Length: 338
Image (tube, rainbow, N blue to C red; front, side, top):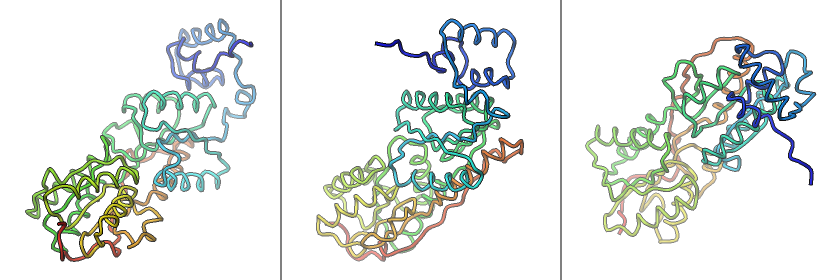
């Protein structure tokens, strides 16, 4: 059996630096102390690491590739962002390299190291479990753009979405229709879900509507999670006339649970989703939802990371406003559950 070839990640670990620093030392573009450079070169010699020749001989050190670190490549939500990223990068003759962390911090770090070993020219992070200080360290090495989260870190570039405002819009729409008892299918322990719930709570307080704790159930941002949460809500003794699901995928599952239990949308229960995924216009009935232009956010992220790579200063925190798309899944309250 052949001995496993040492990786760039191993060299970085033994040297006490990031994989991108090792790459830039090999390309002679790193701004590091002589002692740190000597340490890395010594570890390379001791381990017998042999860097990819093609990556080292590229003119100007560029690979014309951008890393994209996401959570779930198979998610329709992230899929829309990825499509926007690919369209922009392809127009500039760049290739996107994708890796997913699946919500697991250790796996995310492993996939990040894998991308860095490929000597990428920049990194787009489509939400992350990593802390701001960890991402800031990366941003010192190469252009980094975050999406899906706001940051107060002035050294990071972020393209966010007004989740707080989106939550307020969802609650406000139902309140204006006359709904007073509103259930919520919350998301997992996630910054987006927290902001959306904060917006719902703030708007409900503003309008004098009490959110009943037992009518808040947690899903996990997929269809099955929404289905199960809706089943639990229907088992509650408290009546409600409307439901807000904190993403469209959970709303799809909620639709099925309501239908199986004999409820008609929106005559019996109104339903609001969040994200405005392409499929939401074709559900039965078409889903009222908070529009998050994910494709445009992905395109903005790609344009921004390329601009940073060319030396242009970019706004530290860019935000996309929320809007509501009213379709046939919401109406005036007629009947309540029960």
